[in-house]
Length: 313
Length: 244
Image (cartoon, rainbow over all chains, first blue to last red; front, side):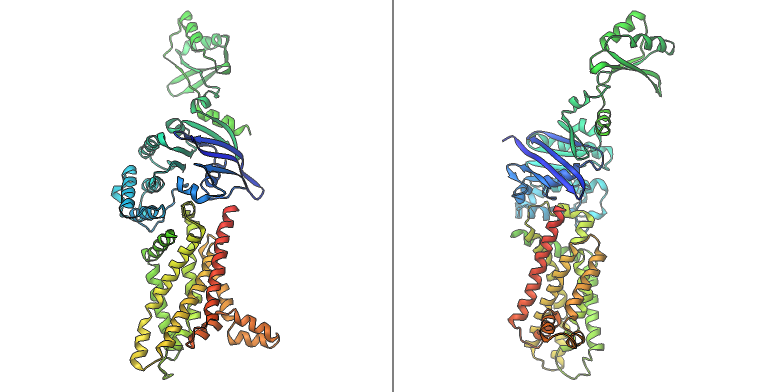
């Protein structure tokens, strides 16, 4: 069975507020799914329902064959969950806390010690193992939360903003860890950092107002940007004006924007429907002997797609 | 059910990880001593028993037990650890029982540490140690009932102060409903049956019955029923908050 998580028409109402509205999707082994969405979009609520913390108003989630509304314990056994903010008991030491998690997860004795040691090693927690969690820095607290989620080597990992508030090195480390584990697990992470989707996710979903608005690989989402295949061009200042006028007349060109950038003015040539225009732009430049100081093709930017999708509704 | 033990150990250890345990025990012992010796006329009575000591327990618990129980669920909700706790593979029964039993065991430890009173009274005279043992058991059962009420009300709010105040208020009602003042007041206008019903719901009535030295099944059943009902309500409240 390759569908590890199957979310079926999941919905959650808080009184009159619809937090999650009829969301369905599946996640397979080997996939890293990124939930994208503005704050309050319903990302966390969806995760809380899959992990059994909140009861859905309607619909359900099936994790490794177990239905979270019927057999929550079986679901919880298969999931490693890092809640938002990585909560942990502040007066416990990391070692004590992980030992507690190991026992609750059904390990004891040497096996519990082995599991804790392995998780500690994976998230590089060694130095602070015997300090109370409340005295740890944000980065270490997050690692304690990660170690807790990984301890039983779950098939399904669900992490709510795993890199939020970490410095760039720590972010890199957490992302590397996620990438390492992704092969044999189904992973869902939520984030509002778009670069994170590029860095770790094999698939991205955009959620806003509780609705699923887009679902695809990061590349496919980027292709929906109006900047997909756009050409960024820097010319000598004297050539900017005539070149812009000429390029505007090329077939396949939708618009030419001039950008004021730190290193000088640039032209952004936006194609019609994302078609490739670098060839015809190049020919035009050569024919007119306009020497570009810089020329590049844009892949499209996730944040444009994100803004475009989440503000249209 | 192994998870009850795991939760129990974590919770009990968490009392001792902060100054809470030590402050609680010291205050409990100091207050118990002060009440017994100053208000209870322990020496002046000239009797070798611990009746003055035990008679203040309902009032002592009224102030101190809500301080113990208020954090049980409210703290988890405030710090967000409840999301971690309730997504671990444990049943609701294990979660509720593990927490409650740890708090009850802690109250038991505080109670056991009052043994110098017992030594004192045995040094001064020859008390009926059977009565004293029964009284200790009764006090422990009553502490459990107070704690179950507190645990249940702690699940209602993420604010520990609210949990404390409501618990103290509810426990106060359960305690005074059997005191002579309240019963005398009710007796003046209410039918006998109502007075007896109100008295029968009082911790005071059942505790006093036990401190006379006989553990009547009805008194024990009463305390266990209160514990059972409030722990059930506790589980229901935690469950309802999931659906909210």
